[in-house]
Length: 285
Image 1 (cartoon, rainbow, N blue to C red):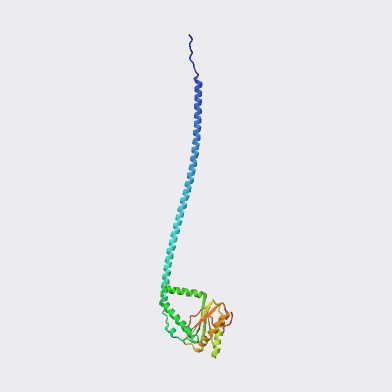
Image 2: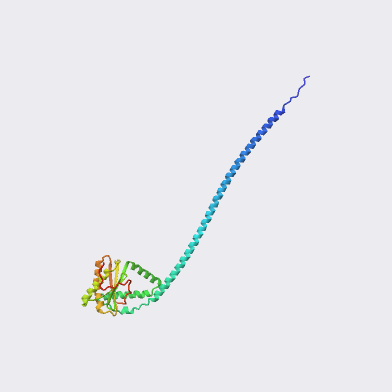
């Protein structure tokens, strides 16, 4: 009878192999885990840096917005303060102008009767009387005008004087003749005896005085008047000489328009400054 011997396998080598396989897998898993950990740490660091940059940008934007808001508030406050100051100044100036206009209106108590009844000598008398009456009507209307209307009139008058000049020639009760023009006052007395010679002398003296004045503006208006107590031997030659004297001025300065009006008896015009008194004016222009 044949007996079977049991089959025996050597387990030790198998156990060693199994341990080697398990250890290898362990090492692979650990290495993979380490790589994943490093990747995650790297990604986390990147995200943290990105979040930090974005937070810094947000902080900078927030600060810029806050600074801009403060600037806008400051500008708004300054604008409001400037507006309030401008309104207050406007009200103050308007109040002063209103009071000044009211005072000026109160002071325009013009005594017109002597002007209405005054005589006007010479051939220009009719025209001068018409001009005088028209001026008196305007003066009456101006005295009754509102402060705004009077202010516009004064501003218009000031703008007109920037482009035109008003000269005044007046025969006083002392026997002298004064020319107020170009900021100067020139005075002379007649020396001729015959009336015709005195008229020519007035024309020559006026032209000589005109030559001493600065270059006139584009328009010159000459107003001629004389004191009610002036003698005819003084004011009549003046009235008679004005047309020829003005014509000589026109010919001498063709770029300037010269016009004149004889007012007749009237108060003496205000003196100009500086005062230049000439007995025999020289022709320097």
